[in-house]
Length: 229
Image (cartoon, rainbow, N blue to C red; front, side):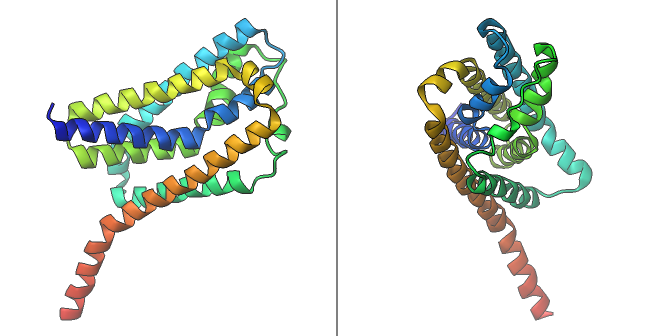
């Protein structure tokens, strides 16, 4: 593997991780996870966090690998996906920034009447952890990597590493939810959420700009050609 491909893999991995990390916000959502599982023992919470991490890995891998095929089936171009996905990411960041500090507390009613295994995929994995915004961003990231690298092996390596890294972060954050809730407290949660939201908006704007820069030259060329005719 030459230096150019290695640098491209590392760049895409870092960009993908920062994008998905900002959308998922695992350390912020860990406090919601703790509230929803507050009636469970530490052992059960650890096992549940492991399940959520595994399910998140599956959701991300499917989105990263199957996203491009879905786009081709529906005839959606990559620039259109980048612009739409970037808008979704930016709006998600704005929603987090504009939400009140008590918004997370209203959604922390735990489902103590259900077994922990029933909670693992729904609602803890989908939509709490890997919701529609995460899936849309993963599809966009998968399309970007395939377009830029054009290398199947590199795309597979990057996708698996990205999904595994994000899933590992989710597992770590959720498994330490009790510790975080004691150490960080409400004010720390608020700060982490606001910073993640701002970074999320920046990433969304960058994705939109990338999509616009891809489609703008062709639009200008078409306009010039139409005037000549």
